[in-house]
Length: 601
Image (cartoon, rainbow, N blue to C red; front, side, top):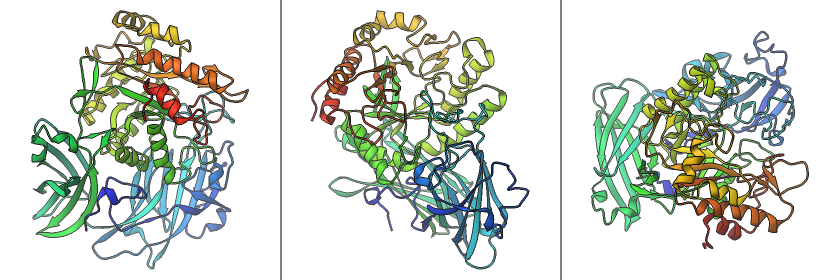
């Protein structure tokens, strides 16, 4: 059976690689803090150690959050989870346990046997339980998570090192914070599907990975179809002989060759056309695995100071998205909230969101794909530099790019923000070299998207001059980018944030890199004691202040885009266009008019 993307309700935790045989393990789990770190010695991973788990937590919410049922925000660096699952080993099939994200280091056991170990709090990982299961259908899964709140070398983003949140920092996020789920798969099955659209050649280059080296006679079939025309239309298909676990091929898409008609097939925010991808693994002609996926036919690029989407200049109207909710923190309170977040961003007039210091849930990215929202992919950074810190970010970033690049909404990579983790970059050759190397690595992993080496300032390379400018006087902000000469002066000086916009080592920066203001605004309209770059006291003043800043940047003939700080209030950081509960502070139509510079419907 073909599973069309139009029928996908956004519930599947891995929307770009879907099978029917999966089961969510979200919900109640046994839970225990382990502040003394004695769980290993006392063998809490054994099936008979259930008395150690004296509390119940609701997964996937972190124990610091109210939604988890624990709601303890103090220092608890080690936590344990326990749950009984129902699973039976079947002939020629595997039982997989998927964990969407566990911050920061995780060990996983089933029936007392170690099933997996993973380091990195922003990425998903999988444990094959099949050969570890005791006889019978009921089994015990135990997860241990370690996240040292005082280790500045860990990529932690905006998680506060102090006991209570301050400034722009939020509560810590320890342990499981994305969905956990079971999946039954055949012995030979697909584990990854990547693709790159070649518009000029009217084709899609596909790359797939099998779970194991294929036996002779194994093929992978890819069928692309859409309903963007009159009824269901097959766009192209290919069957590729599999000689290795990595399988590559090309799907010709003849409909794209008609350049007068291809716009109906191209993905963009105004027309987020998605193409269904039906994937099959066959052995001697017999189908052994069937997977549903999708893709967007779109290209990104840079040319002569412009960001390009599908070969044409596209002005980026973006908003900083912290992805934080009052009761559930970095995890959305409901699955519906992911769609509602994307809808709110678009309703307010934005065409893009810059995900800030986190990697979003794949279901958020699905709705960005489905509804049409450009995404700037970022990750959590560390606070200190060392070879260990560089290795940790490099390993995690490699996984992030691998896991997120199937989403057409992701159009730009941002591995580092504001020199976090490389704060002495201007005076440190190793820190400069690290940002240069990380940019090159990103291009090597995914040459199809632009890369920003260090969003905000001290750029050492990359494809975009991404500046942060929190000037709150509209006239002064406008003067920074009034024309090419003014923009050049701004870039050549110490910069709006009192750091060099472009580092002396930036020989790898594109000569035609577009200039974008990727953080500005930050106007707080809220109660006393909150934080913002400037504070206003009533809605009229808020509209005037925010509108003036947008007008200043929209009037620039030089800029290729901008990103407003921020979408919602987050704890004491009350500089959102909407409250923490996602209620716009002005009528949505008013905000949209301010953002776009015109009264759009």
